[in-house]
Amino acid sequence: MIDSYGRTINYMRISVTDRCDLRCRYCMPAEGIEKVSMSKILTYEEILRICRVAAEIGISRFKITGGEPLVRKGCTSLVREMKQIPGVEQVTLTTNGQQLAETVDELAEAGIDGLNISMDSLREDRYSLITGGGKLDKTLRAIDKSIDAGIRTKVNCLLQKRVNEDEILDFAAFAFEKGIDVRFIEIMPVGYGNPDAGLSNDEVLAVLKERYPQLEQDETVHGNGPAVYYKLPGEDGTIGLISAMNHSFCNRCNRIRLTSQGLIKPCLCYEDGVDLRRALAEDDDALKAALEEAVRNKPAGHSFHDRASVEHRAMSQIGG
Image (cartoon, rainbow, N blue to C red; front, side, top):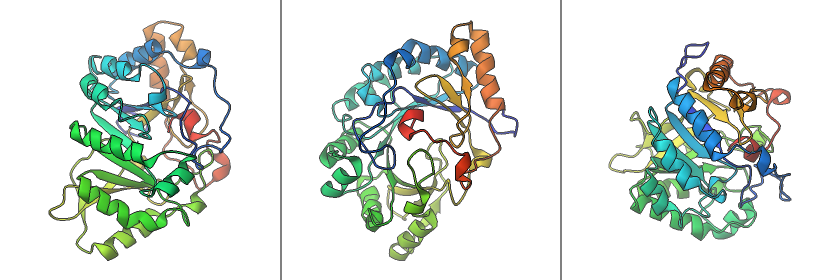
C-alpha cells in the first residue's frame, strides 16, 4: 500500500509480548516495568487475522518481536501459520538469543526466513552487566545453531560510550569470522534510550575504516531494513549501520508497528496510533479500513531531536 508521501508500506513489526527475560538498561529499568495483563494482549488468532487482512492491502513482510518473543509459548506455531497466509512473502523474528538455541530447529521447520539476534558485547562479564544477568554463551550458541540450520542470521549491537565502544573491531572480526551481518544501531530517545550515551555511526565507520581501509559499501540487498552495509573484498560477513539519529532514512521507511495490545504505530517516534481493538470486534472490512488509516497517517519523518515529542513507553512495551 502507498502512504500519503508515496512510500510503499509493505512491512509490519508485530510485538507478541511485553515480557522479556533480560533487563537491558537502555530498554527498561533494572527493576522492570509493570506487566500488561494477558487479557489485554492480542491472542495469536487476532494476530493472524490482522496479518491476513494486512496481506490483502499489500503488507507482505512481517517481523515478530517482543519484549522477547520466545518467552511467549507457541511462538513457533505462530510463525508456521503466518507463513501459510496467502500473500505473505517473509516472516522473520528478533530475539535476544537466550532461549533461541532450544528453538532454532522448530523455527527452521516452521519456515522462518531470518533471525535478528541482539548482542551488545562479546565479553561475558560485560554482557551480563548490560543485560542484567544474561548469559553470553547462550546467545553465542544460538547464533552458531542458527547459522548451522541455514537461517539468514543477523546480529544487532547497540554501542554506548564508556560501556562497549571499544568492541567495534571485535564485532567486525566476529562478522567476518561467522560470515554474517553485524549491524550497529544508534540509540534513539525512545523509552529509556539516551542518544547522548551512544555513538554516532559516523564515529563507528571511522574506526572501521582506520582498521580496514579497503572497506567498501555493499550495494546488495540484505533485507527490509534501513541499514547501510559495508564489506571487505573476499569476506562473506558484512557490517551494517542503522543511523536513525544522524542519517534519517524516513523518506524510504516501509514499515508500521503493531504493539502487543493492538495499537498500530505508523512511526516509532510518536506515541499516537490506530487502535485495532475496536476493528477486531467488527468485520474484516473495518479492520482493513483501520490498517489503511494507519498507513495514511504515517508521518513524513521522525522528530527524535525534539525529545519532548517522542514516545515515552519502554521499547519492550511497544515492540523492540
